[in-house]
Length: 179
Image 1 (cartoon, rainbow, N blue to C red):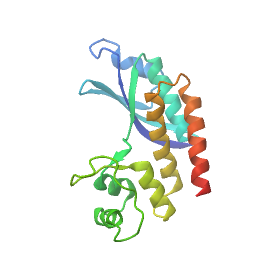
Image 2 (image 1 turned 180 degrees about the vertical axis):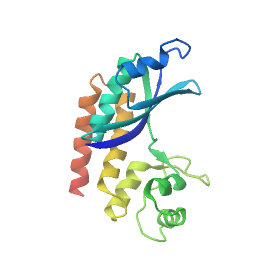
Image 3 (image 1 turned 60 degrees about the vertical axis):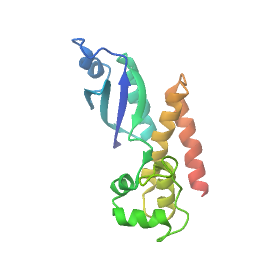
């Protein structure tokens, strides 16, 4: 078993209800800290599970059982160069050299705010690129893929979240092994 940490952003419960926060605990989220910020519940999960998809799927079911609507799962897949440095333990300067092509070729291009001084990159693409260069562990790539897949599944309103996540992550892991 490994401990996985992520946040579920949720709404749909009145925070002024006497039992609003207890509902999360009663639904099985005794491994989470729940707060209410900027109009949303932040369910900060630290869950032991055999895989990231099991941890996310079970926490999603718990949040739904509490009566909340899940909006997204974080950390976000869009990252800037400072976020990449923080997630990898690399220096900001090293990440900047990678992104500019001065240290290695083929760094994934930004996917948002491309023309700004702080473009955003897709974390799963960057994680995979770093993994291929032996600068990041495989588990970190799997977690990045799982978080991104989780949000895509939530956006598609798939009825069986756990099964959909498992299927999507299996396909991604297969692609990763083939590379």
